[in-house]
Amino acid sequence: MTLGVAHAEGPRAVLDALLEVRPPFSPAAVVADFVGLLRQYSIDRVVGDRYGGEWPRERFRDLGIQYDLSDLVKSDIYLACLSRLNSRQVELLDNHQLLLQLRQLERRRGRSGKDIVDHPPKGHDDVINAAAGALVLCVADEGGAYSVSPLIM
Image 1: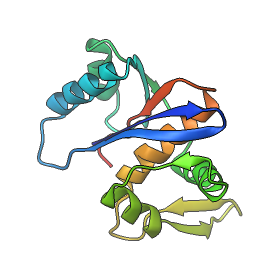
Image 2: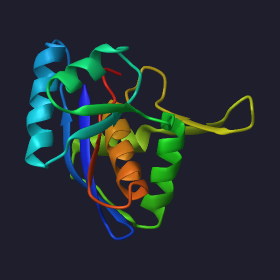
Image 3: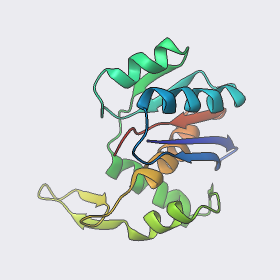
């Protein structure tokens, strides 16, 4: 499970925190840890994917955090983040997994002609997904701290 927290500084997006918990773990305990970090940043809402069904939404809600489903698919998040990275509008953390997963992303043309960005076969992208999602959404939200929590990739 991963959690990224970012905030906007004008047109720039700054990644403030990034947590990754690898299996084996208790999902309920991880959500509780995530909520602890979110409270440190005075965040009461996360945006995440549909992985895990209703369970993550219920667990976050039980702990006082609103969990909204992302309108963006990860390819759209990556493409938006890439544009911001190339224009130096993003400040990343010095995190080995983040930088490794960012470098390993592959861009290809999908069947419909739309670009698809994803990790290579047998690769992972949960850390870059959480970071990129938080960075893209905090600027789209026009300021304030924002977090994204793609769960169990």
